[in-house]
Image (cartoon, rainbow, N blue to C red):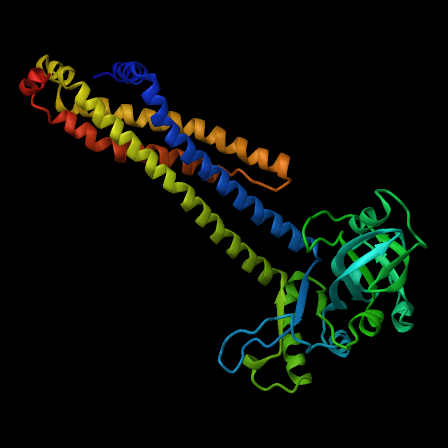
Length: 406
């Protein structure tokens, strides 16, 4: 049988019952579209997290408080303990080589009030070196100075999102007052927008001197984290090791497994975040893939029905010389064509859903070549797998019995 004849017969067979063929294709469309959309959302989330982590600073190493392991060998909650101090950060800056800058932080969420408006946001107590460590730029006014830190000044620098929430978009509130936890702070600067959303956005923060945060807000002398900027990517491992050894000595800890802190580089954080999002992407794609199996069963059911309906036709074809391979290829081609059409429409649908999510919900999505190739491969595989049995059943029919079939 010529390929042109095979394609023509396939087209005629599928178009003979448009409603049934359309409903069968719909199952594949929904399955492929769901897989494309889920993978796009997962990869978009991965890219967004990577961008967010990289925007936090260059060559960044983060020291967080908290015991790595308890006596029962169960990891304790990092960041919740109170084991790091400003003195630790000062010692790191003095004794660890290849350190560009060090910025201790004391961070908590507070209700911020100004001119009858309020917002709940992250208040970060820090030092003058923070902009250098975290790649923060000032848009208006100035950042916290060392004098502000030493004098425990009640001054604040707002992120642009916080500024917009309290004073309106595009305003210049330098010299205005905001109230944090019942205490008035004078605004001395506004940072430039870095983008990003959610609780980790540096645009939705208020920065105050760390000594002020410790005395007037937290009432304690600990710090939440210590951010360290290495001089270059090549020395990050060396700096990370040096910080670990120094803090073990300062905290009088002999067993590294019992360290009351953790030292993580950007690569460590990025690797953990990527691993988590990749796992979620696979899980979402697997859930969406269940509909592909349902669609494949629908194709097999349709082809089995078609074989029954066309039994006399099969007998006639065999009687005039059609071989078993010709019959098998004909029905297999019909199944593959159904899944191919469903795959193409499904890719268009999935891409449309992904773009729609980005446009309407503002969530980043990424349609990759891998997901498109996967969709085509899966759709072709479904056509072959679920079309093989009906095709073989048709090919094995006895021509005499087929001609007698009513």
